Image (cartoon, rainbow, N blue to C red; front, side, top):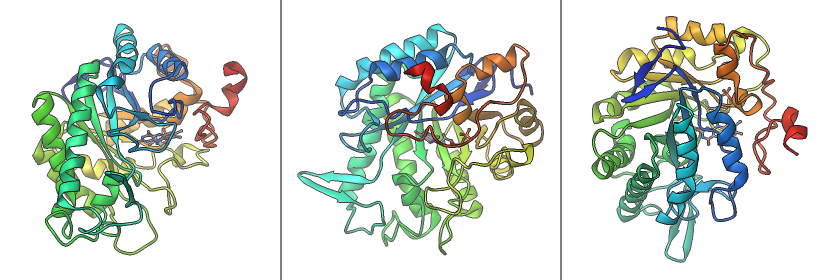
Length: 353
Ligand SMILES: Cc1cc2nc3c(=O)[nH]c(=O)nc-3n(C[C@H](O)[C@H](O)[C@H](O)COP(=O)(O)O)c2cc1C
């Protein structure tokens, strides 16, 4: 396996095995529509010869993500995405959209925040059916916009991570208790997307290989493996392995990646998951050198490597590597790009001003 060979992953033909992991631009307008700044980010990425661009987390319904996030809660959003998708396609790339929900529920006029935990009274079965519908409908809109597939965001502490976690999910019905029950909602979302978009429409999952929380009774690699097996059996097309929640022992975007030993911090867990599922596994987290990415492919059973922060600083990094300049990514993992005024690298600010 070579990083730069053509391949098919999760049913999508790709020009290489390097991906852009979903990265919020924080550049949407106040209703979650695409802005010229969002287009500019994807224009640059589309010219970077990346195999698969995983489009940033996008709210499945009205107000399902915090402000500055993109939304796809009704048909009026479709048009804005079409132009970006076409641009990526015309530059030889592929793109899937990450569908997400923060866990702030709107019940009529009422706003219910379930981000600190929930039981079956706070989220009823009707609420669950509505959430499953939101994902299916959002996926169909994404398909109409031309996206090559969907990624269900079940990592990093967002709503589905909490459904999967025994720490936050305190239900006693068929959606809580055992790992199987906690993962049921993700399976239902997958089934609904496939029912609405067709069984051939690729659906990927971003999964925490561990939540890395200090508290007892949280998800670790043991549970992540069980969840991965369940989703594999249910028909997921690929799994991107990440880890961590904000406020946890480790967040998803670690810093202080100075040496190669600090890179690729989910590679062992990704490898463990790859051994037990039939679908391709993608690994994200701290890749900065081409050698480390190649090594992961050769030694860790994974089929692709995805990057986030390095592509914020250098949208053309993959092209640069492919063309022979294989020096490590310039990203210093400072996380200054995690900025609600726009995820721009501090080193690129002058250029963008
Ligand atoms: C500015 C910023 C925005 C991010 N947005 C998302 C997102 O929308 N969805 C997601 O799954 N992860 C998101 N992440 C996490 C990254 O996808 C990735 O998992 C993490 O940064 C580790 O990879 P890296 O070392 O290549 O940056 C974001 C990270 C950053 C820094």
